[in-house]
Length: 243
Image 1 (tube, rainbow, N blue to C red):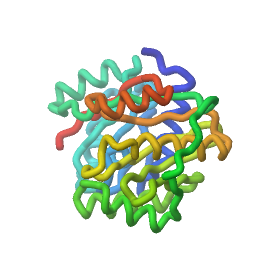
Image 2 (image 1 turned 120 degrees about the vertical axis):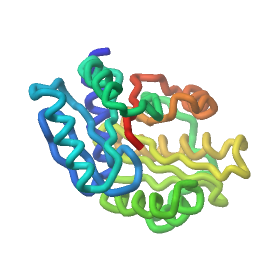
Image 3 (image 1 turned 180 degrees about the horizontal axis):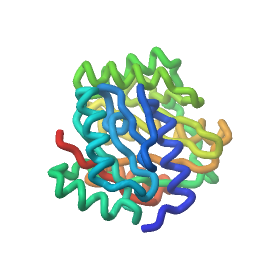
Image 4 (image 1 turned 45 degrees about the vertical axis):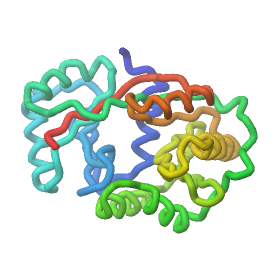
């Protein structure tokens, strides 16, 4: 698949939506490191074809991640410039994990925000996400630390009673939807749908006209929910990691 302008813009926006502690560019590869937290803040992201030998670039990144004491991880999209690299990384023993879809939708026609939708201040939202997120305490703390570095306008979405929470990040005409979490005790009761609609409405009011989100490809209930709201699959990505 060729790297379309829309896909490139979404990739750029998604990087801005979760800052990393350290970033550097190396021959078309964006290296993001945070010493913990989500993989998307601790991964090598190839943005363009390589001009240097892959072995040389691989060793460079391997040394960087070793110095940070984090697993060497690559995030690859299903675009043509990653085909050879994906094979190379497989031969290096990096396992393919967490296949995911990037889905997009126009914000033209949306249902009204449900009555149970709420927006929180940042600190209240961070506290709620700490409760809903099933990650380890250290990973959750690092995630909050990175989100507090966010420079773009954010929508801290929730629902009445705190049964679900999610994040919207507005980057010009684009809005990313991230970190949708629902209390396992009250799933399949419409909280996730209400939350997503509320965040989309807030993003539209904030000037965005296109939304995108990332969802694990095996999470069919979530994919069906997003499709019912007008989202369609744009492209895939996955990780290759020694972890």
